[in-house]
Length: 116
Image 1 (tube, rainbow, N blue to C red):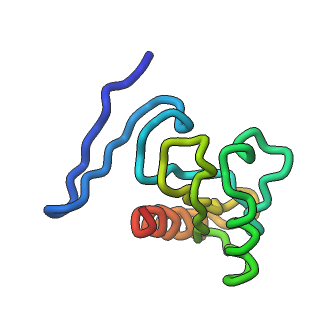
Image 2: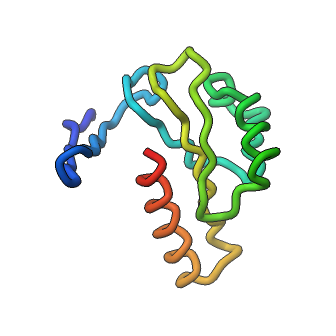
């Protein structure tokens, strides 16, 4: 079942559209890779073919590893219809307390929205 898009307006200039579909075919400003690791290493992952791996490596060289709750960014590789890929590093729930997980997820969502 495909959901109808949901629109969330923030101020005068920003609208967030939430859609269910194939992120590789949607025409968007940003897509979010919610399975990123701290080194933005995508080897062996299906989505690796849609991401600019060179930019991911350059991001890590310039900024260091991405901490849990934070994001890195790269452009798409031209095969996807988006301007950038936001690589979000979510917490692994078994590694943190519930309160720490909540704090990390809140920080992650804020970081994603700021990078979008």
